[in-house]
Length: 69
View 1 (cartoon, rainbow, N blue to C red):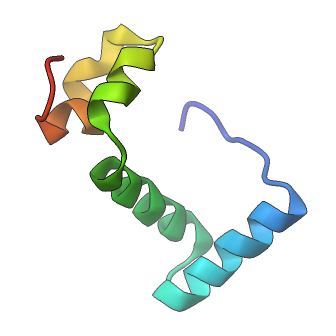
View 2 (cartoon, rainbow, N blue to C red; view 1 turned 180 degrees about the vertical axis):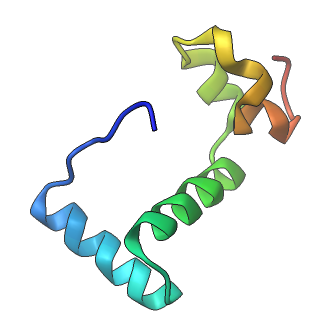
């Protein structure tokens, strides 16, 4: 993993509850959350604002395929 962000108390509590609902560890729940966000966020807007154009080939938003990479 390239970056491990710290969660504040509220974020950690929220993630823990989501993990319980999914019956999965918090680390896997976080992965599910990111997978879901790729499906619901506007990929064009994400790509437009992205500051790292070196990883487009492996980016979930590019793979979504509803915009020009």
